[in-house]
Image (cartoon, rainbow, N blue to C red; front, side, top):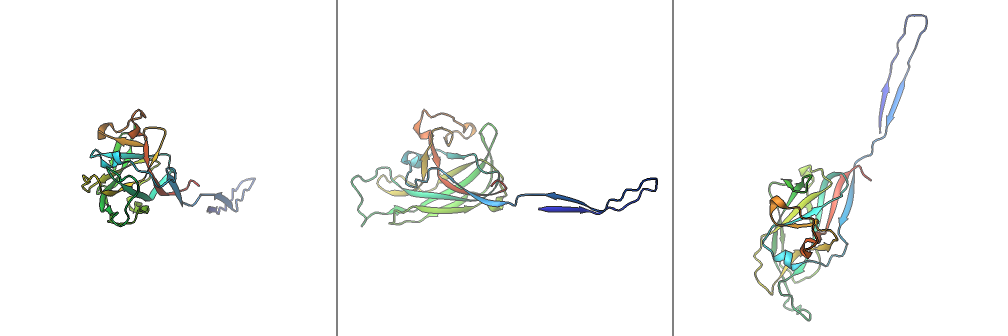
Length: 216
């Protein structure tokens, strides 16, 4: 709350005199707070090996966020393989191989084309080899980029060679959506494809996003 006090004292040397002693003006302003939004279905089990093993760029649109500055993004990863073993796993030999990613955020233009990079240098994610198949959670700090947005594209570029058909790797957790613009893949100059004719265009990337906002 800001309070402005104006002290004025004057005389009009005429027939009438006006004396203004004090004017009090109050204006309530909401303090900025961190608001956390989960993007997706909260079902942290699903991935898609077709999307994971492609060599084409994969972009995910996140929309309708609180108006404010992106502070932190939390991503979730599960295991996937080109040829998953059927009938259960042998946990004596089971392992998920080390998997590396580069993460880049992009602005979204009015026509939903990809805009400028938010982080010029990609943020590296290294998911180490493990025999544990629990969900892996990774938190990325974006507060220093001073990025104010209600929507953005996020690209997870897989760096690890993943040609082994029977090997498990760390893959991002996705969710099924009814509209096609949540998952975008292809020509970066024609990135916006609003179509659900291809089932691969109907997945979003699950995330937990913290925004510094006055919307609460």
